[in-house]
Length: 130
Image 1 (cartoon, rainbow, N blue to C red):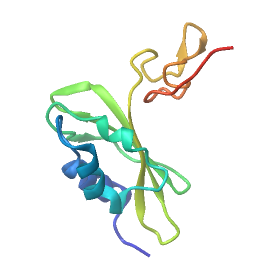
Image 2: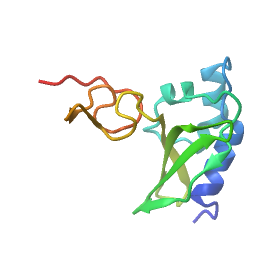
Image 3: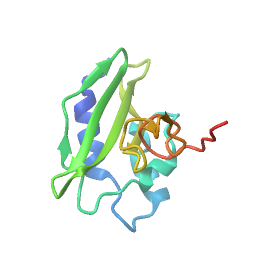
Image 4: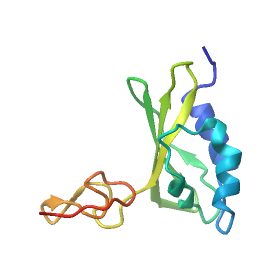
């Protein structure tokens, strides 16, 4: 069993997170040990203007931990970090999505599921209302 908490892992990741203009591939390689196999490399494009330096309290749901992350310089620009504890007890980052700019995190746009974020409230998804 590994002793680093989900918060410890997230803080380590945020300290090493790429800045604007950094290579996504280089960043991915540097962070890979703490990334879940389901992590999408495109989440590394979610870069701060300065640094992600504000982290909420942890919401634990089973083996998942969720945190809202922002910058002190831009506290209204929110991201959601989701970590999962693997079979060896280590926390790994599953996703790091910015708040949807269409529905502002609600998942609902004009009374319908938001097709920008796939009704999740976070990131971009290819959704199509039918």
